[in-house]
Length: 390
DNA sequence: TCTGGGGTCCTAGGACCC
DNA sequence: TCTGGGGTCCTAGGACCC
Image (cartoon, rainbow, N blue to C red; front, side, top):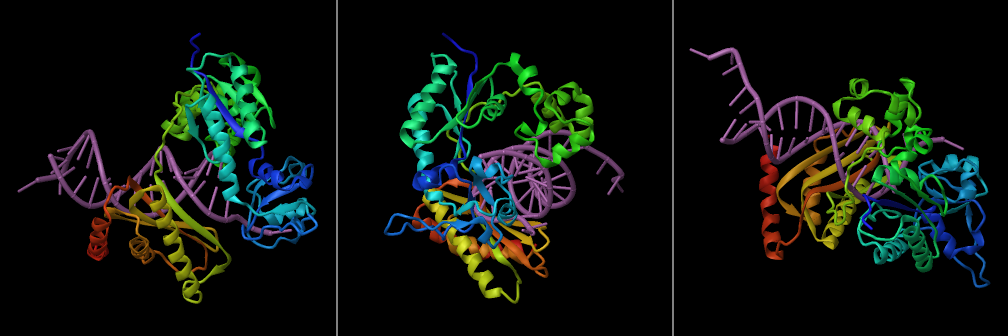
């Protein structure tokens, strides 16, 4: 049997929280939120019991990364400030994120899927697209097979959507959660997709959502009734015609296996806003460790980058970026630090800082020899000197 | 009780080149 | 001697996603 394009979207259910429940089964059925500083793991005592911290005791700037379905009942959702979540569900257990553990389970579930359907596109730690077009079995069989394989090797559940393209597959996987399976064709659009709010479309965020609402467009069906012309008039040629297409379920993007990263970055939000002069020493140390972190990540992944950027967020949440492009790729912490410092000189440092970040982009696979790299390091002051005089 | 950290993609202007 | 058009690179900002 030759199937038309068949794409699956697989989404792990409340992934971080579910991984934590494997470690702390006594929390099953209780409201739990993941977020906050990652150095405060609860410890299991001699007698086997664990002292968990509660959301009500949290002080700081963290956000909820994931909440169990029991916590979501209280209105707790991901991206929400932990202080606000504490208002809604003060007795919920708060666990710090443990990305090492989540990455481990991420590898496990992706490997399990790959044994069944190898054409996988990574969409972060807990999601993938799978191209099923070359498989012979029917969609239900494949999906049940994949869900069982994921459960067998991780003891975790996932939700799967299968549709003729990525856009619809992604919408589908969200329709029946947790542990769901939804299979859909274009013919199901009017009944199943058009009643949904436009925000369910990947690519329509808060800004576009608000603007559409002002035009009286709230559901995907509303959007489908508007012509391409008016949408382009309101949203510009490109985004306008895209809106028109997605409302009709049109999406030709291929499933991309083997995607090279475009940038590697580190950033940190301070516990309190820092001042460039008064907190100079702390800032300088943080700045250096961000550069070292980025350099480490670049080296570990085998990349060098030519463009070094910094990101600053001020007390009032305004964000600015500055970047500089070198004539050669680097993965060296000191080189990155010098270039980043050069960028720092181009921003105002009167207001207190809330966040500092360092990014390296224009990446290339790093095949440069050690000797060549050190020679290039010596070139740097010259390159920066040229940039500075401009 | 404001708003993490890691990313991608798009737009837009100016420089510079042919 | 006032006036092209296309292409690429660099920089800055913003929307959006997980």
